[in-house]
Image 1 (cartoon, helix red, strand yellow):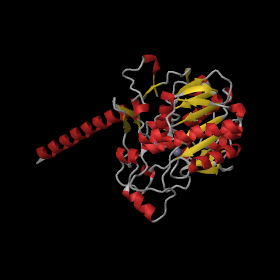
Image 2 (cartoon, rainbow, N blue to C red):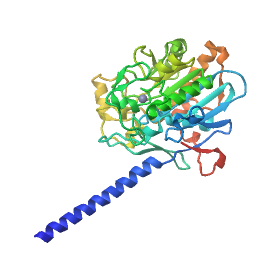
Image 3 (tube, rainbow, N blue to C red):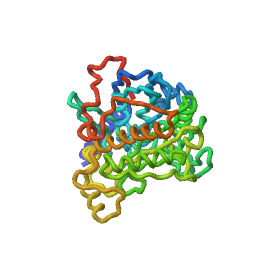
Image 4 (cartoon, rainbow, N blue to C red):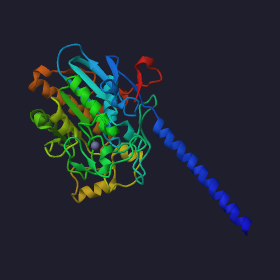
Length: 388
Ligand SMILES: [Zn+2]
């Protein structure tokens, strides 16, 4: 009897060790994966965010800054993805832009991954996939799937109460790792606050005129399929909303003012603390809904979910959804088209900030497939392959 108990204990310990080893391997693979980007032949420079402030030098959040300088005087725009790494369209749209863009007037800055630390995180207990992929024919583009807040391996400990700097507003303590609650940042703060601080230094030093922060949202959330703008962006933002709602969007893109008393968000703080005018774009991502079914890569990429559809039938949603879902192509197409339209309307309203771009596919082309616009790093010249 005693022998039998000992055998059971040994087997249990051995099983636990095997499971720990598998989990450890999977965690490490997720954390250390590098995402290749084949930059456009028209790129002029790739900097690091720490070139603007050394407060993030040597950290996981010292991201690449992809710069397209036409050499022709005009405006400057900054576009970034992955404020929230569980919203994949941001990094996918930015990568696609970086791989295809040509700028003929003004300058374009792109950051694919603003909070890389959060992309190494996951939401415990929600069965999030570790990665997501897009089949491109030559193979698949593969990105890390993450969470809203930075990884505690990079930022520890959280304060009991997060007091936003410099407003003094109290926020949930976990939001000290949420990069869209820590603008305009703090030079001696925690990692996300320091990342925002470095990004603000870049915006000021480079004289950036427009800033676009790409997001996605659950259909249960009211700030959905919309442009949120700082009050200095109301004319451009409203014109973009009306223009795209008329054509080519099948679902309207609305617009909202950034609330003046809600602090830490890019659309508030960048506008309040610099001359730059910030915008945030949102698009529907059914996987973020609480009432979703199986949480897998298919739901993430196809945006089809019968439980979310059922909720739509009973009207508690802020976005329509039917059998066709919200496929990733349409979500990327909406964000990229909204960026181009914002540049176009800003050119008309602020001609001294004119930016002219080429090489970006149309809304219809992107809705068909994203595959033709991502390039294989295997055959690309080595000096055009970068890793985020
Ligand atoms: Zn978001």
